[in-house]
Amino acid sequence: MYRADSEILAALEGSGEVVAKLSFYSLRRNGHLLLGIPKDRIMAKLTLNLYQPQSSKAKFTVRLIKLMVGFRIHWLLPTVDLCIKDSSPIAKLNGDSREIGFLLGNPEAESRRTIVSYYAGDNFEVAKIGIGSAAKISVLNEAKTIELIPLFYTGVVRSRRSLSLNNWFFYSTDFVRGIAPKKQDDSLVLALLTDWMKHFEKKRVSEISVWNDLVEMVKHSELKCADSVLKQLSNMEIMVGLYHGDFAPWNIKISDNKKLHVMDWENAILDGLAGWDWIHYLIRRSILVDGATLFQALESCVIWAKSVEGRIYLIKSGWGENIDLWMGSYIIYNSISHNDADLENNLDCLNNVMTDDCLKIIK
Image (cartoon, rainbow, N blue to C red; front, side, top):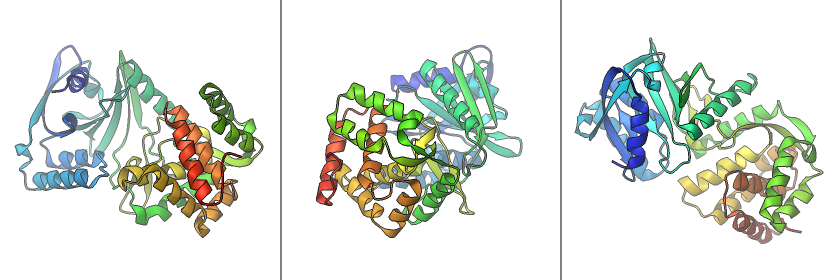
């Protein structure tokens, strides 16, 4: 087992007196532990639902394991054992810690988080757990952000309970059943963002706090092309409000009644620019699901922006015909806030797309 996996499992076990001994069937990705699947068939299916695969290979694997669970042959999978002690966050869940499932986050991330599904009386809940300094702060800040999001924003998966002890923190939510949206669901996804925009305010970009972040970021990057975008953006008036920060198919579930539920708010801010979440959604899906290049992804965004639907949305959000500034400002904020060293290449790529489309971002 990889060291990163062993470390997070040991942290999940905690210390002190043993309160439960658990055994899971495991699913790995690139050799790293991804899912701990319990023996209980209902909880096993719910645990598999925590993972929203995007590639064809991953989707096939999950479908195969769901069939194995259905036919009660998931015992063929390799096992992993946990010895839960009384200081473990799992022991503090408001439910039955004897039947749980878990999803481990990216092993290469600075703060690796864990999502646990469990019975809470007659209902099912999910807890996001951050163990260790960086992960604890990340999950704690996410929980605080969720609490700050006004209730009139629909589709936000709300926190039910939270707890902090020693080196960990968790918050819990209701378990959301559903699947990730597909291309045919784009109208539903965009309708949610449009509904959010009803509560936005039109503001001069240079007067909002995110502007200061952008200016500071660009100042340290010393990129003239990024500075050019900001000069053109400064006096524009754009609709400002809730920005998820990682609005992507794998962070959204559509339930059977076609209601959307948005999760994972660790990158959210309350004064983002309208349209940023939608362009993020289009780009991430194009690259990570469809296998497109960055140029192709940006080109598809331009095509959408020039459609009737795109024009209406961009006019409502305040961008109007300024497709280049809508896309350029998003690229700058997203690239620098996520320490993306390819900011200059990303803007050059956008510039090539704009040039091919008789537009140019760097003037």
